[in-house]
Length: 531
Image (tube, rainbow, N blue to C red; front, side):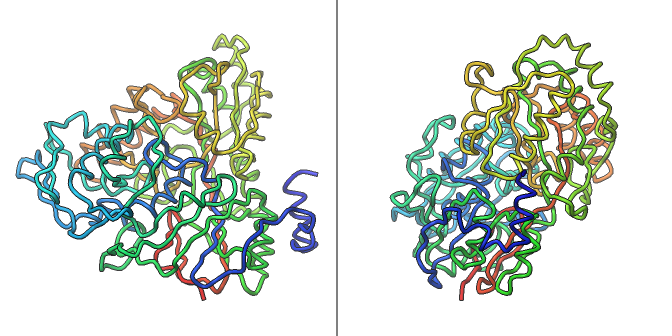
């Protein structure tokens, strides 16, 4: 019996009974000031600059504050910043912090902390790298003021400092921010609304956050990462429950309060429960991703990548991820979020119809020598596990040799950062997903970039893609942007920057005594209360 069949039978019999033999987490009785949350995955590491895992970004948004925050209209709004000025030639930006901001250790937030944090962030982030390439000086002016001097104008400066896709401009104390950006930090002190209790952290089991009494929220209404981050609970416990049936039972019994990503198969049962609310977590959804390593065989060969794309059937992936509900997914002959202004299907023919015979022909033409495809697949997240199972069969069907490495998401996060050959601890492919909010344009879309060693994991080097990214930043109006994105999409498909496995929506579920849960690209805990 496969996972989906088991869960459906469990749903029919009543989950509480069906999961009686599974080990339930030992949780204390809920208190109104403690919110227990089941995240999408284990918080295995906690450096929001070193990597780009959403689970890390989501936790980091509690602990570290950002200079600006993007709102639900994708507009940057001031957060830690009180004011900014840009010179008439667009070359000098001067920023001032809000006064009275403190880190969790009691020290004041100063411009030196900001400068060090921006230097570390800009070494890893695509927009940050663009800024570094035109940077003349990034330096403090006084305790609260700093300046960023550029060689040429960068009109999207505020978006770079506000965007919610990882890595974000999380501000750390200078001594921590001076850590090599390619080495993980070990001290987790920010100035955000919650403190991270490192002594209570048990990777694989729980992570605990405590309200920071000295946090100064903004006065504006909260909206995604913008506005006032007012905490209405004193403590947030992230409870790691990899098994979906166990998590569902815990939510039904009240042992947990909020589940970030309930399995679609279990939603009908959760909806029937009188004390549980269920809704789409983010209307902008997710784009599934089959990420290939462009550095080593076999995926350093464009024809091998094209063979995979030609044989790929997005419906197989989407049904594996979301089940039988056709309202939850769409095929995606491209890379940008459906329903948004820059969505395009230009050049997406390879993704519109599976052709296994053509895929085998491309593989033969590639000169493939039988190198194993090291598939590093996280088993502790339903989406990646489901996509990985489909991929293993897909690769075998066209004649690729598969070395399937079943592991956890934390290990995937660490291993995918390695540039060693696949047979020496590296990798050939992994599965992930990209929030639709991150895929609306190239500014926030880390995975679309193809600038070689500076690109996201997989390190594609496709000048045709990068040319269009540059053209998009220079575009004067929406019509010009759309034309550029059409060409960018075509180049990304032809060169297979990565293989999109489809667009899908995910649910979230919470107890009805919890108020203030909203939809968005990440769980927003400020404004959430518990009766």
